[in-house]
Image 1: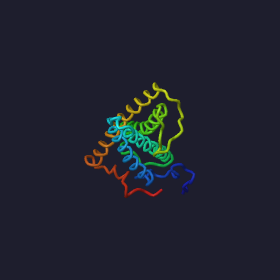
Image 2 (image 1 turned 30 degrees about the vertical axis):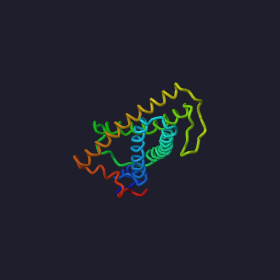
Image 3 (image 1 turned 120 degrees about the vertical axis):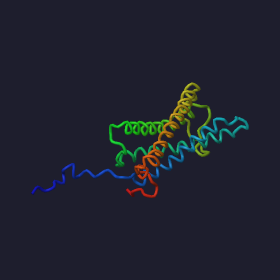
Image 4 (image 1 turned 90 degrees about the horizontal axis):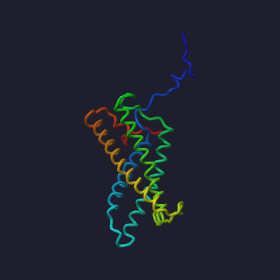
Length: 196
C-alpha cells in the first residue's frame, strides 16, 4: 500500500479559507468608513466659500491629514492582501461575474492608492503648506500651478471613478446578500473573522 508523500504539493496545499482573517476584516471596515467619510467631506468642502479666511483651509487640512492616514492603511491592506490567503471567489474563474468582480476590486485598489498620491502631490505643487493635523510638513516640490491643476483634476476624476466602483461593490454585496443569498457576505463579517 502506497504511503502519502508529505512533499506532494497536493498534500501540502492547504484549502482556501472560507473567510477573511480578522486583520483583513478590520482593515476593510476601517477603510470603508474612512473613505466614505473622505468622499463626503471632499464633495462638501469643494463648495465652501473662501471667506472668512482660514475656514476653508482648516477643512482642506483635515481632509489632507485623514487622506495621509488612509494612504498608510491602504498600503498596509495591500501588503496584507498579497501575503495572506483569501477565500475562494464566489463565482467560478472565467465567468463574467468573476471578471467583473476582479476588475472592480483592482480598480478600487488602484483608486485607493492614486487618490492620496494625487492629493499629496497637488498640495505640494500649490503655494500653501501641507499640514498634518496642524503640523506643517516639509515641501517636497516647488510650487507649479500647471502641475497643481493636473494633480487636482486627476484627484477629482479618480474620486468620481472610485464612487462609481464603490457603488458597484455595494450593489454586488446587496445582490449576494439579499437576492442570491449565497453566504458570500459572511467572508467579511465582523464577528466571525478567523484569527490569523
